[in-house]
Each structure stands twice: as structure tokens, then as C-alpha cells.
Image 1 (tube, helix red, strand yellow):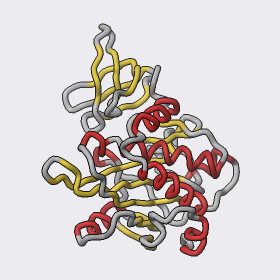
Image 2 (tube, rainbow, N blue to C red; image 1 turned 90 degrees about the vertical axis):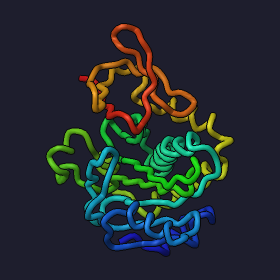
Image 3 (cartoon, rainbow, N blue to C red; image 1 turned 135 degrees about the vertical axis):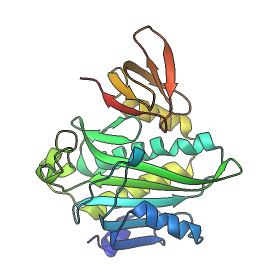
Length: 262
């Protein structure tokens, strides 16, 4: 199990230090933290668990969460600002995950729009943001992050073995999860303290790392499925794509599923 003493000693910042919740098991860290948030938990509360019995990703997908191998984390934020700015926190989190992995593991992660962090073309991290909106602005947000750290990819479910990997598999060595978790929390603290004034810098770093741009992607929505060229991200971190007829449109994260075209 993650050791609190190691995690706290590795932290440089104070935003999360006094509000760490470490659990052996939970249905999902997002669900646990949403319950705590509804009871008035302070901003900066961070919930870790060793194993999720019902971990979730975007669009209702499950998230494989075996015990003792990954980092399964949710943090509570109470941002002040417009909903469009709050939506950018998914990209902020992706950038912070990529930076923390680079800091600790020496790997070079990329971001696949909208919420996957990849190494070697395969997913190592998924991000899920959930919110409660009051009067058009977020009352609070729960930011869920799951990272495959020391997993053996051969033990992944069959449907994941071709698309997912772990940091250990890519680097050829295991990593101390407490050190990576602390680096991630410190990156999140640094970026969130500058939010939303630092959005241009976040967008620049997100664009630099985004493996989706310049690639043909398959877009699936409830109405249709098609192949597009991914060209850029806009100021709200929507994905700008062009179809075969040269027409452009901007996709929002809640609307579609995106994967790389063969």
C-alpha cells in the first residue's frame, strides 16, 4: 500500500499535504471524493486507493485498477471562473501527469485528445473530471487520475493489451509510486495556483505534447462515425478537425470518442 510517510516527505508543496486520504479499496476514488465533497471536504483533498473495484473512465468505460501496481487518485478543486475555463482542467491535468512522469521516470509522454497520456503510442494514464454546477459555474470539481505504473501489460484484460502499457514496461524498471504521486501533486498545485491566468501556457504545452495533431483520427458520436484530420486545439481546448471536403469543425470532449485512424 502507498506509504503516507514517504508520500508526505516527497511533497514539496502544502496544498494537498494536510488533506490526504489513503484507502486500501474503493469503488472509485472519484465516487469517494464526491461523497466527501458533498459533506464539505476542503479544496485540496486528495484520495488515493490501492484498488478500485469499479474504476471508471470517459463515456462510461471501466478503468482497470489492480492492487499495488498503479496510482489511482482523485483531487477536489473549487475553481472560481467560467465553466469553459473549468473544462480546461482536464488538459491541465494531462500536462501535469506528463510532466511528472518525465520528472520521475525520464520518459517522454504525449497526450491523446482529450484525456489520455501515452508513452510509446500506448495509454499509461486516463483522466476523468466530474463536477457540480451551480448558477452556471462549477461549485466543485473532482479530478480523477489513473496511472499504470508497475503493471505487467500481459495481465491487462485482452481488450487493453494492444492499446495500454505501463511505465515499468516502457522504462524497463519499476518506480516508487509515492515519489511519482508526490511529483504529480506538486505539478498540479503549481499549475492550479496559476489558473486561469496560465491558460495560454497550458495550451502551449498541451499542443506541444499532443500526439493527435497532424494525424488522421476516427471520430465517433451518437449520430455518425468518420475520419478527419486533427489540426489544432482552440482556446477552450476543443479539437479542431477537417473532413475530406475541407470543412472544419471543433469537437468538445463530452460529445465524441476519438481514436487514431489506421
